[in-house]
Image (cartoon, rainbow, N blue to C red; front, side, top):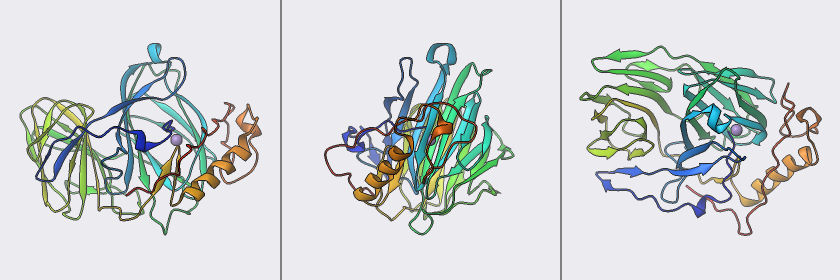
Length: 327
Ligand code: MN
């Protein structure tokens, strides 16, 4: 997915409560563009918080009826310095990228695309998809691996379950399960399904900070209540995380040690300086200026999306102000 945001600093302050290092990050609605555009609920980044571990972008969407929204049709666009993590609850999305990967994103299956030094990709919901519901997440790559070759991984986690809960661990370790998907910083990503009235006590790494993105249902995280589309943040320093489901809950648990590096994030790029992001943008524009079929994209950092004929998405104009470093 692409990030139509011009400047994350325009984002309003989160109306969050704070207690015991747990705070609620509320979502704001962002239209993805187009006449019948899908709207996503974005909880990261926001003014008060840029990252949770290396997680730097959290969009939650749906359930959307494709008959009403037109579905997802995101034409080729570039990325640098990050990984995209696609997780669906309902629907199916076709992914194509410039490293030659062609894959379907399906519920319960994680697709992780590493942009590294540069990639371009498209994401289009399949013709049979009538409803779309899921999350699009980005992971910032650390300084020593942000220039790696582009890559793509697909993994179907086996569900693990107990009394009143079920989990799918797609990145990192939780509940005795470890995902085989390699990451460049320690990370946690898991889907949790918890039935109403169940209290789930999770053993977690005390070096990690965590965020629980509630898809549906109301739950408390270490006593702090979150509602659907909210991201409940828990600071490092705890070795358990207690999730109490007041209703039937489905949620994504994200985590990692505080990233510790400043990033400059604009449109689809994660860099380190204003000048670097300006150069990333110019390289994309030089490849796509005047191009209406992605097979005519000129050679360059972002390559050519194999098998895609949509018109590539040009970068928006840069803001007048310098892009800010965030951490
Ligand atoms: Mn994308």
